[in-house]
Amino acid sequence: MNKIITKIFTAVLLVLPVLLLMSCGENNGIKKSGKIVAVSSITIINDIVKNIGKDKVEAISICEVGIDPHTYKSKPSDPRTISSANIVFINGFTLEHWIEEMVHNAGGSRPVITVTKGLTPMTDEKGFGDPDPHAWFDVKNVKTYADNITEGLVSIDKANEAFYRKNLEEYKAKLDELDKWILTTVEQVPKEKRILITSHDAFRYFGRAYGFDVKGLQGISTEAKVQTEDVKNLIDLVKQRQLKSVFIETSVNPKLLEEISRETGAKVGGVLFSDSVGNDGTEEGTYIGAVRHNVNAVVNALK
Image (cartoon, rainbow, N blue to C red; front, side):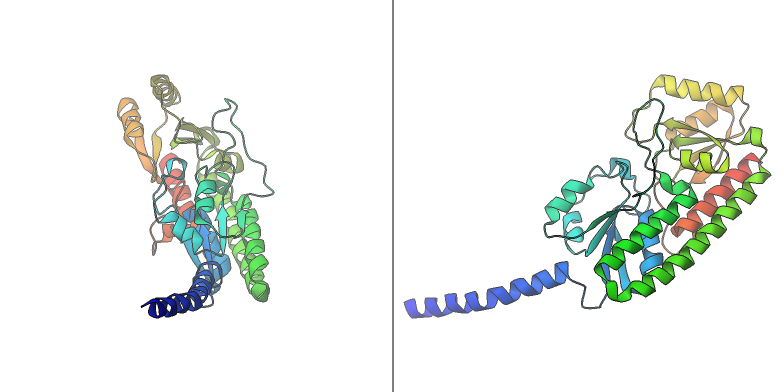
């Protein structure tokens, strides 16, 4: 009996290292398909990764479509998702306060790239929720996002550097075209009517870049609690300025903005994409498509 047990134990010792190597290769190396596994914190970053990586990259977003990253609660599967990644992309500017523990719990070692590196964040004069993480709403900033994503992919896949850099230049050309289109399209709205009332203060980069006065019911983060005074002040502003439209967001509860709409008679001018793109397979399912949707909704409501 002892001899049998000894043989079984010896066999296990021989096989175990092979199994461990196979496991490490699957989790920390390039997948058998040859694709880099890139995990992003939000769908906006994930879409940019898709444009740079194309068929060389399997792109996965932790926050799914329509999910608010400010208040995100991690799922048990999230560390496993990150453990399968070769590289992780985050926005930074304190958007993903939950990501550090998640990466730690995933174990292993992989680069974590902050895509806002090189940008200077906007700040809130009230000091709440600083810095403002929503830098993607100035299209010029997204060129920096794309640069940082490209450098990240090149750092772990040097063999395909030329491929990534070619895709980068093509994507940046599309961003330049989008930026010019926005600047032309917003000219349809008289400057005195360029006031954007939204669920939370996510559009200040957009306002600075394209000439809009932006007022959010909540602060920079949706974690901010709305006070009765905040609602009253916004109702007073809408009435005083005789604003015709307010805007709700896909990833934020619309009830309070709808209440303000009823109180003031200002219509809900549309639903804007703020912290997430739209559903896969739709035009709004891409960053560029979501921004185009937002601009068209704002201009049609305010012009």
